[in-house]
Structure formats: structure tokens, C-alpha cells
Length: 166
Image (cartoon, rainbow, N blue to C red; front, side, top):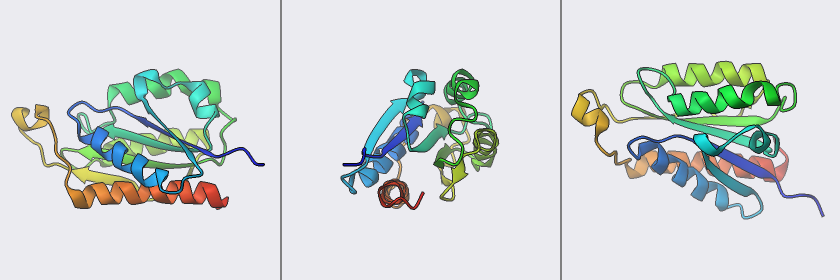
């Protein structure tokens, strides 16, 4: 019997928006029922977790037009330890943004290019339009339509892994 595939979701969330997005992605991935889904906070994820995953989802809030420092720290701690060992693995990105999220996406894409990962879905960016200090620091509530996009991404990742499409 073949070893079940594993989808690793590495995330950081400051005000709850990104956490809601990754929970929705995990729910979607779990629908397949044959793919193990691991959800790890960036502070607790490392090279062994990446090496043990068949597919990856990276999720971050947009902080100052960048990925969060916690997610960058994960990449800093993991990058060289997995270099040339994860080539071709599929990945996708979730960003909870106050502005447009594209800076965070570009940073993750550059790292994924170095790891030679393969993007298998368009990044899901949820824009909260939080532009004041109060709005930026306030707990976020992600709407049903955006959560459905996250759920669909998780489901697509798990289905692709289960079918061997990627």
C-alpha cells in the first residue's frame, strides 16, 4: 500500500485573518480523506517538516508590503537545509492583505523559485482594506466568499496530490 501524501500548511497570523484562511484551506484539503494535512505555525515549522511534505501551502499576513517576519524566519531557518531536496514539489500561497498583497506573494515566489518548487495555483489574496492603525491591529473577519476560495485551494492541492497530478 502506498504511503499517504502529506500537505504542509505553514502560516503566521497576527490578527486572525490568515488563521481563518488556513483553517478553510485545511477543511478543503481534508475533503479528499486520503491526504494527511499538517498545519504548523511558522515558529514551529522547520526543514524536517518541509522535507516530509509532498505539497506545501505558505500563508502570511501582509506586513509593510511584505510577508510576515515569522514566515521569513521560517524560510531563513529552512532554506539551505532543504535546498535541492524539494525540487518540483507543488506549492500555493495565501495572503491576508491590508493593501494588495503582491509584495508578500513576490517574496514567497522568489524563495519558491530558489527551492525549485512548482506553483500549482494562483495565489489567493484576501484584501481587508485595513489602512489605519486601528483597522490594521483589529481582529479580522474573513468573509464566506473569500473563505470558499481558500477551501477550494486546499481541496485542489489535496486532490492533485492524491491523484498524482503533482
